[in-house]
Image 1: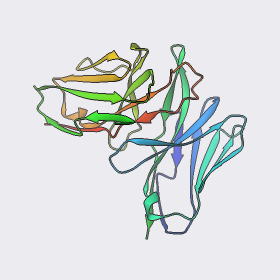
Image 2: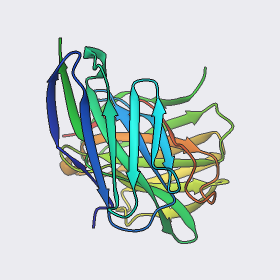
Image 3: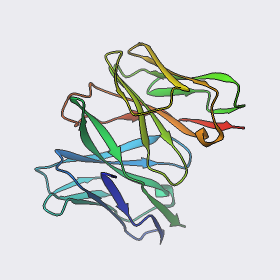
Length: 113
Length: 116
């Protein structure tokens, strides 16, 4: 079953508005990561939040983590057209003695100028 | 050149062709990954190499054959593919996977593969 699931699948907002994306996961984690993917390109790491952290900021990004609800949210404030991309959460999963990242299906964000 | 590079960026091949995808990382990492990204499906982990040893083979069909000759290079050899193998193939690298999953992965731009 999918470890991370983003919600909503697609989000369309006007430039200047805030965008909020949510991620739910199933098993215990020691961190959760958010990545961004421009259309048809590679993924870029945005931010990592550890299980003992509740909130983390990076520029216009704000990530929260609620381990009791097994959920995280990514907030992009004062959005810009350049923020148009797909956003993925990823959680480490133990496999065969090592940790691999499991990605959700992503939220496709469109910021309209 | 910096980061993670992938060649070719686009590839069209017939079902009987043999081709290879190449990935190179210039970050000093010692773990490398192949992912497959199909439309409307989550990113699927295919293979993981850590210190040039394959540590993960995620039930991938044998028509996909990885090769990691050193910690900077990763190949994906393709033969007798099917149309459903058409997808974006992404390479990534990181520090060793055994560091309790806290390592960030760095991705290449991907190879868009079309199988006719």
